Image (cartoon, rainbow, N blue to C red; front, side, top):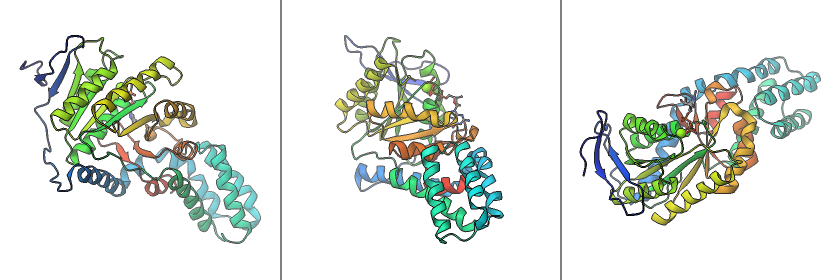
Length: 365
Ligand SMILES: Nc1nc2c(ncn2[C@@H]2O[C@H](COP(=O)(O)OP(=O)(O)OP(=O)(O)O)[C@@H](O)[C@H]2O)c(=O)[nH]1
Ligand SMILES: [Mg+2]
């Protein structure tokens, strides 16, 4: 057992090196904070469902962050309020045309936009909606219905075996590693013992970046010593260590990859299989990170990742820098995959559990 490695962390254990496999290291960060754990008589399933519930409650209570994170999209959509303020029946066509334009500019996508506008037109002409205010409320309800119909399972599904395994996947630079760090922070605050797996073996500085997040959040991390390590071996070693050492959740970082790169997409399948061999039912979640600034362009990548690995949830990042927040609705409607988190800033607390109602209130004034 080696003792120290650098000024910033202590290397406390080295996984024995099998003859044909690269070397793995488990780092423990001594400055761990918030070590209080759930005492959970209902066993692991109890801890996991409590974690999911806690995140959900947090989403409801933390609407201010969501509100500021979606300010650009809200500004785009604020024109709707002006339109509806002076709405009268004879003006309906013009108002709905402009409303349609506002939704399209915010990347709700043509299909959703048409659906919403036609629903509103029907209800206005049948006399069901009689004021600008009622139209606004109906608009919000339409969006909410779209989100809850297909993307209702927004809570993390961590199963009932320990450790739960979450894989974070996506194209380059979307915010995978950052989101993983922020997610660890949330889960750890909920009382879970978290292990990171440095599965991005492709980019040289990737494990350093993850180590910084591990240190920042006081979590432990498994990294490969050899640069030649396969991502699937790192993940499987990490999950093994997670199992042996009683971790609750293993968060697996992966390299950025283009959805069109066949061999890299194949690698993800190997990663998935490798962790499933260690813990039945793993990975419990495969979260696809999508860069919110790309708006509707995220749809083809989401489709491809879903087809290859079976995505269980989405993390939409950088929505704070984007006026295209309507893409959240489009992506849920098109893929039927729930958005589980939204990234609304670069700070450790800027990953918000997704709550459809809070989202609708955040984008429409
Ligand atoms: N404003 C903002 N920036 C974000 C958000 N999420 C991530 N970022 C930034 O996006 C950049 C890329 O983030 P990473 O986490 O390194 O992305 P990645 O997907 O791991 O990148 P690769 O590993 O290279 O594929 C960083 O500068 C992050 O700080 C977010 O929600 N809002
Ligand atoms: Mg990364």
